[in-house]
Length: 119
Image: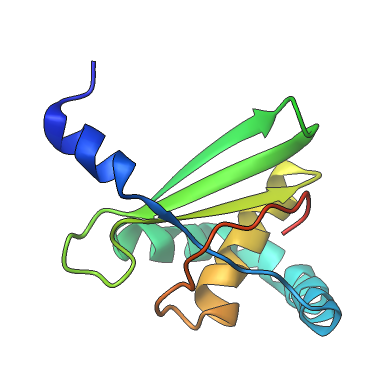
């Protein structure tokens, strides 16, 4: 059973609204071809920056899904959750990392929920 503090934090959770344009999808695919060799370094950076990444298979949408939250209460993304979906484990992890470190430049995520099967 969740304690009261965690329940309140979950109730106030904001979802990042990152809708990718076609040119951004193309930029990601170019980055993906190079970054896949350095996935361990990108994941280390994510952990060093106090993020928590959860990976699962979404049976309803038949895709892999990550959710990322910030654990540092003083960080600008604390209280936000970024959800990403893709067709493979590698793609969903790298897409998540790209959205955080390239698209958002490691900064604050836009917040409003938007659902998409890819991205």
